[in-house]
Image (tube, rainbow, N blue to C red; front, side, top):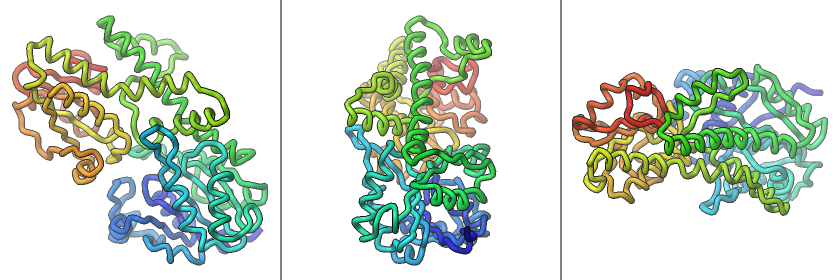
Length: 426
């Protein structure tokens, strides 16, 4: 078959944690690549070699041959469209496919016979062919599976993790037929050093992606439930897990908050589809309930400890360290730290938030929370380490306690310090 680098010109829609590294990777592999995002300010920043998410270096942007655009006219003339837009959930915890549908409508006027559309967004089995396909066909006037070729290759990006980058993780690929699958493989193979795995169907690949994070969600829910039990027994959960971990087949999961754009969201895509088919998932939803309530549990444990120390919660001041959904990352999507703040407010606790990674304006806009840039030492009744940023690790327990009044509570929910260094651990 013809060399795809000579035949195909590629547009990547969505320049976040998924789309931007892919855009740069494709350009490095020699493809004529356009990175597209509707956020004009983000695109302009990329043109100035700045990634506001901090995932891509200035040098990578400066040296790339990729172009960036926010106007849909720039999509004209492209033969391959890779969609990497977010797939969030609604307030009712059902799939919100509006960004995906909007991306399909944006590229539809620019599709020409033979165009290939690859979806990378996380979806439930059937979305690529049953939702995206009809939108593309109707809006373009082209025949689906004939003039428009469909494929699915789920993203496996882990924000803040340089070790497991896009190039170093096996890429699942799938397509409507073998010929299209060969074309997809020829696009990704030069980019992903770890290789590609050919799934037998698009739905198989969609299902594989959605269960990856569902499995992790359930494993974390299990140890979170251990933590709920052990706190009532007066046991340190991390000590129990350390002892159990001496057995060769004990899985090394730890309790914690489960937020972000994947683990806390993807299971709802699978359960939504299952319920459409008349099956009510019990285990998956039970795990979700546990994980969704851990932020409130953390806040209540802190309030109980304040009361034990004869501190009136309604007059207490607490410094919450970290708001991103995970360490060394600026992403605040679906962060469960917000639940901690909400629950503390219900107890009339005054909480200050500090996180050197997040954008204060974005946090204020999305969550209505003010980020304290420089918390003052000596003024807090409790210091709650909610996110294990390297900055907090380097500070250590003594420096963190300096933010508090004498006898202040240090609550290390991530267990980044030893048991004797903190007053509470999850």
